[in-house]
Every structure is written in structure tokens, then in C-alpha cells.
Amino acid sequence: MPIRLHTLAFVLLCLIWGSTWLAIRVLVREVPPFKGAAIRFVIAAAILFLWGALRKSGWPKGERQWNAIVVLSFTMMALPYGLLFWAEQNLSSSMAAVLFSALPLTVSLFTPLMMHRKVPRAAVYAMVIAFGGVLLLLFTTLWTSRPALWGGVAVLGSMVCSAWSTVYAKTRLRDVDPVIATALQLLFGAVGLFWAAWALESHRSTTWSNQAIVALLFLATFGSAMAFAIYYWLLKHMQPYEISSLNLVVPVVAVLEGKLLLLASVPLTMFAAMLIVRTSVRMVLRSEAETQEDNTHHGDTETQSSIGATKLNRRLPKLP
Image (cartoon, rainbow, N blue to C red; front, side, top):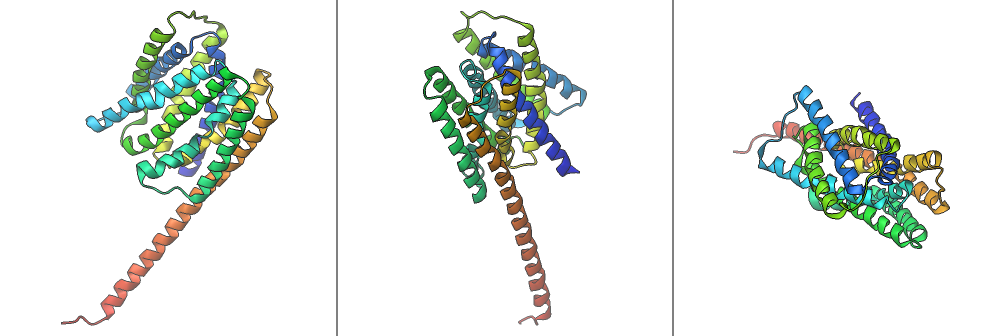
């Protein structure tokens, strides 16, 4: 039952975050990016605080937990999403999603450094192949347009920041309620984004069309409030590089939605990159399962050896 629940949550998260790329693209056409991201976070934080109050969620305790929440407010929320919203002014939603799919590889690089835990070699090989597909897309499709190229660089910067934050959250927020922790991060992150909007976007006008409002509400309710609560819950039960592999599935959803709803053209290089990163997700998850089986078998062998040694010691006569 828990495995099925984890799988359902994983699939739901892929569908939600696969749809947010298109919603961001729609929103930033009419609303300045930092302002749009800040309002999204405020609405999402309000929803989560209300949910937390209804379920009587516990608040963070101690300086260590509060420090982690403050750090993640900027490294998981404000900076990555500010960069993503800014990038999609000049970058298609499907392109941004495919570039961001390099996150599992980056997480696998941070994991040994921050958690002192080895990542299965097969998983690393799979994610290196996926990253090769991303580089193919970056240098063949975006190189001809400077605004799009800078947008791609911003997405990769957001991805690196999110990867570090994923491993950091795994080590620091184990005992913190995910609903309240997410609400606090969204609220503090919104403060940073509102400051960026005041400093960099005060001269820009805002148009609130029906499409922009619907996109904002979807991003706040599902893309932030629901998705991050699910994400932090899964992070307690999965390894960082394992959960980050959802970013290998998200581009599939983003590309299909961009093609169907916006009638966006999809270059052949994007199909090639998407196929590469799509096939590597199975290798990543399979390697984790094999590692767990090996650890279990090794543990059982050690236990049996220990029992056998204990019985043998009991049979041997004690030396004076």
C-alpha cells in the first residue's frame, strides 16, 4: 500500500509540474515575471497555512530547522523560480522543461558531497546520457538566438540551485511538517521576489486577462501549494536523486501540452533530447531498486553469519 501511494504521488507530481511550464509561459506574457512569481507564492502560502491550521500541523522547532527554512526560501523558491519566470519570456515552455530535466544528474553530484552516500553507478551513467541530450538541445536550438540562449542559461542556473536545495532539504527537514515548512518557504521567498519586482520591474505594466488569472491560480493552488507539499512528503521516503528523476518525465508532459494547446512547433532535436532523458528515468529507478536489494541481501547474509558465529561460540569450551 505505501509503495502504491508513493507511486501515485510521484505520477501526480509529474503531471502537475509538467503543466506548470505552460502556465508560466502564459502568465509572463502579460505579468512581469518576478511580480507574477511573488503573487503565486503568497496565494500558495495562504492556502497551506489554512490547511496546516485545519490539520493542526506543528511548527519548526529550534534554530537549526528555522535556519534551514530561511535558506530554502531563497535557494528552493525565490531564486530558482525568479530565474524560471524570467527565462520563459524568451523561451518556450517545452524547451525550458527539457533543459531543467538535467536536475537528477546535478543532484547525483551533490549527494556524495552533502550526504556522504554513494549514488549507484548505473544511475549516474543514465543521467550523464540524459545530460548529453540536454546539451544537444542547448547548442543546436538556442545558439542562434541570444535572448533564448540567456533564457536557457537562466534555466540551467535555476536547475543547479534547485538540485543543491533538494539534497539540503533531505538532510535538514526530516522532522519538519511539510505543509508548514512549505508555507513558510513560499512566504519568505515571496518577500525576496517582491523586492526584485520593485527593483527591476517597477517601470513595467501589468495586464490581468482571464488567461493570466487562470494561469496564476493554477500555479498557486496546484503548482505550489499542492505540489510542494507532495514533494516534501515524498522526499522523506525517497533519496534526493531518485525523486529528482521526475524531472526526466516532466518534459514529456510539457512538450505535449505546448504542442496541443499552444500549437507550438517542436524541433527534431527536442524530440531527440526528450527521448534520451525519457529512457534514462527507468535506469535511474531500476538502479535504486537493485541497490536496495543488494543491501538487503548483504544485511541478511551478515545477520546469518552473526547467528552462526554466536552458536559456534556457545559450543566451544571457555578458556580459563
